[in-house]
Image 1 (tube, rainbow, N blue to C red):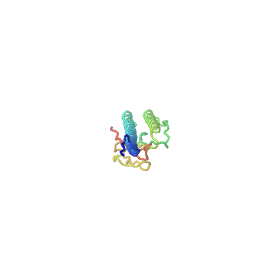
Image 2: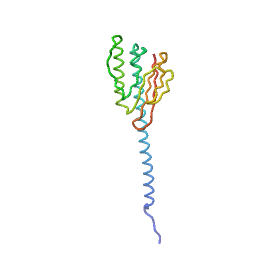
Image 3: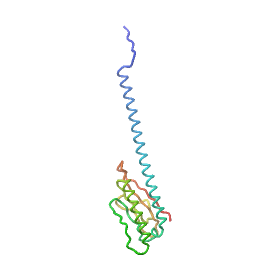
Image 4: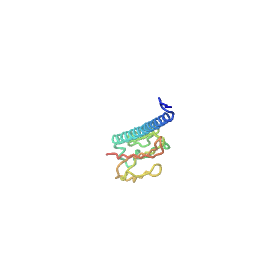
Length: 168
């Protein structure tokens, strides 16, 4: 007696479905990973653009940026409230422009980042400092003006650092 097989057995069908599900799972993981990398890339690009805009505004308001006790030399984070008022009679327009800029940058950062700390300071060793611990600024008047930004990614607990030296 001879039996001829005219179709797939249940075992072959199960193995084929298992292999397809494994490959589909791999594709979904790859797509999700690519999306996360894309979000991170867009986040870094937006922040680099913001720091570039800050540097441009510092360039436009040279008088305030060059002052020893400039309003620009400060820390910006969610906990610090920035008030826009000027008590000094001299150079008040430049100081108000600086305070308005700081307030606007804080608003942008508050919207886009869950946790961050941005420092505008004078520092000859730009790539130092730690998030919420030490800004690493030497605050010497002869040191270049730098913008340091630490932030936590909203998707992971990783801390990222970006620094830009303001060209005079």
